[in-house]
Image (cartoon, rainbow, N blue to C red; front, top):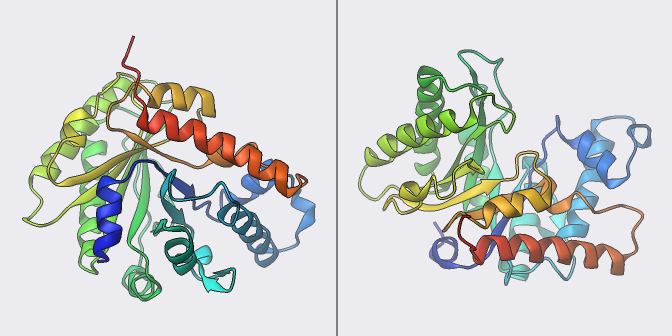
Length: 300
């Protein structure tokens, strides 16, 4: 593991840019950007267009290391080039931004109020390639809809099991057990999830550390004990469908919690914008998210 990257992840001020829309979420991201479904005819063209969007974001003047600590990439983005370099090398060498990789392959059908991750039979080969390309860590997502103790326990167990495999390759795992923002018992689910995460973090072997990505909680500073845990490098928050203003409002009342936003970061960008307007809109979003990640206002 790159020590400079590890130090940056533990200490730097800023947030994570989630640029990891997968095949299922890519059409919606492109429509928001101004690319209609009829503008491409197959997955190859679709991924080419989303890569063009991501390159425009990553090469924009506003996308820099004084605000952004790390970027999470989709696998196809990791394998592509930016400005003549492999994407991870461009991010780290040209921008000082730590590259992460999304590794999950989607979700199983919901059972017991949760959706576990699908099997990842090629995970080890993917991780080996990620290491060769200079990736620092990974992210994997599963979802929670109901406050089911047994379901949430299964989610956390799976996340920690896969995290151990990832750590075995020298990579930093980001665990993402996302509580859906429309959960009918979101606050109760957050209580259960915190208990399960703390228990599993306590059981980590000496020297093993993780990051965790969580839904913005209903109660300010709900995840404080996890943020302070000596086995947890950083706890980051997903926007989860909240608009940027609401997501930043919720983020700003949670001490030590920083953003890892996707839609809330790029949702106002449009393909038709000229470069000056594109960068200004991106810069405004970055600054708002940076402030909410670093300047905490206290709960009312």
